[in-house]
Image (tube, rainbow, N blue to C red; front, side, top):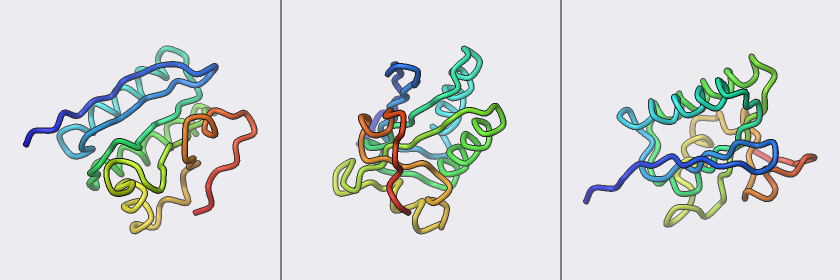
Length: 126
């Protein structure tokens, strides 16, 4: 079974929203990295990564998320992740991976787009 990786973009007020679906791995993570860089190059400083439809994430995918966080912080930007408790199929794989690696606390995590783009958003506790 071949599952397509896809990153689609859109806007929600001042937030650039990148919806990611499929597998975030060694082959596909450079696509996400480039899309984040494209948003910044276009003047965006507030990015939401909707990872609710990502059903597999390896270390290269985690690396892209951490690098994106670092990049956004370096340009005084904001990065928020959408990681619902039950996302792609049987639960958010990315949520479990970040938790297992002990890096989930580094991210501003939200359960849905509405809370992620709220100005005074309260992230989910780690």
